[in-house]
Length: 377
Ligand code: SF4
Image 1 (cartoon, rainbow, N blue to C red):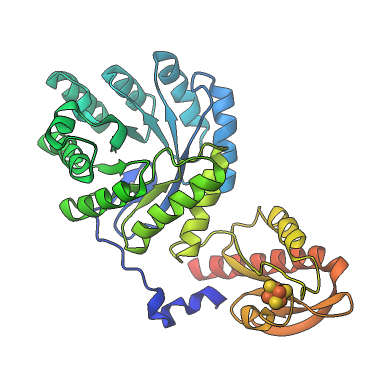
Image 2 (image 1 turned 90 degrees about the vertical axis):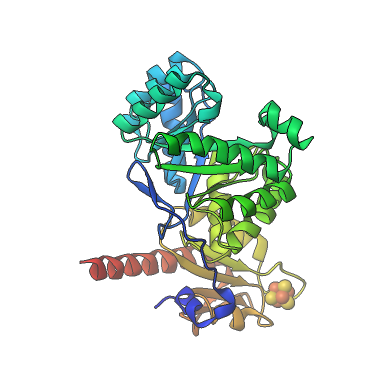
């Protein structure tokens, strides 16, 4: 049993997920009891298949469950089949307006189309896109954005608001439902977190499809992360959200890292090392900040869920170590105490401690992986 398995003993940590229908995005399940998935979007030119595949690889390595690529032109959908074949994760094709791109993307093997059926236009074109999705086992995402609401809704409501966003989403959904197409999820994003949260809360009550949660155009790495964590964190805490995308004006790999950190913070999903570290102060027995930076970099390859506490001194060290798989607490004469499974185990010199902790974590990860494999057999 690892430290985080104790969660069920602490009811104040319980998040009850909103019941939703389960759909598939390629081989990944979204909604119902499926784990909350983390996705991002490439920012390479999709027509440049090699560059796009390269970025998808990086996202896969960071743990992305699903990756979206834009398909603004025919060159993009032409490159899509190469991209889809080279990808380990399902690919969502982002389509705006051009119904032909939607059909081409479905034919190219996209696992999901991000398209708003109400924007396609003529009913025969809507029907053709839905048919292409059905024929090729493609799901869809309706993506409503406060910045691009339909003119009639802006007129009706006066300005972008949660009610207008939900009405837009339900209008698009109705088109799919009228075609007996139910493999879809919905997002209602705004750059304003109050509007985003209110829109998702309303939508969550109005429909049972899975929800793709995100705050759109959140900002740069730091401010966007904070804005997303408040908005999306609020929703996830309330059990709303089946797949997430953090939208940052930053390297898409950061979006995946932030997404997982968000889910880890809420105990909704565990991937990789959850490092608990003190902010450090004059009492620190070693350089906590530098150590945590080094450990984060050297343990980035670990996907096994594990916890590690790196605490500057005995004020909080033993208490935090109690709850983690591996711990280190600073304290006097250039050495600190290593904790294993919550218990003090042995002393270690500060200058050898990073290498030592990496070794311990890697060994523990291998042990946990072997146990999991054994249990699965
Ligand atoms: S655990 Fe110790 S070193 Fe870290 S912030 Fe607290 S008192 Fe300072």
